Length: 75
Image 1 (cartoon, helix red, strand yellow):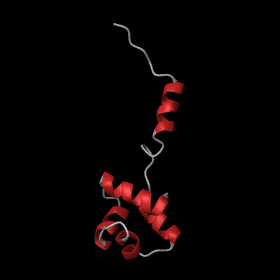
Image 2: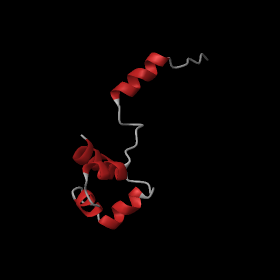
Image 3: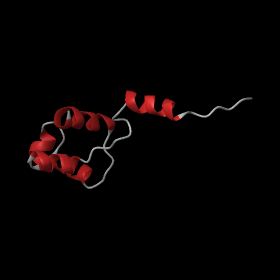
C-alpha cells in the first residue's frame, strides 16, 4: 500500500475553492463596525437579540446562521 502526502498546491487549491470554510466571522466586530445595536443587527437575519448576544459571547453559531450573517452583513 502506497501512502501519498498532499502537496502545498493541493492545499492551496482547496483553500481557494472554499475561502470561507475555515474563517470564522466575529459577529460582534461586524456589528460594531456597521454601527448597529444587537436588535437591529440580529433582527435582519431573524435571530432574537438574546440569541445574538449569546453568539457574541462565544456560543457556537449554527451553520445556517453563520451563512445568513455572512450574506446579509459581510458580503
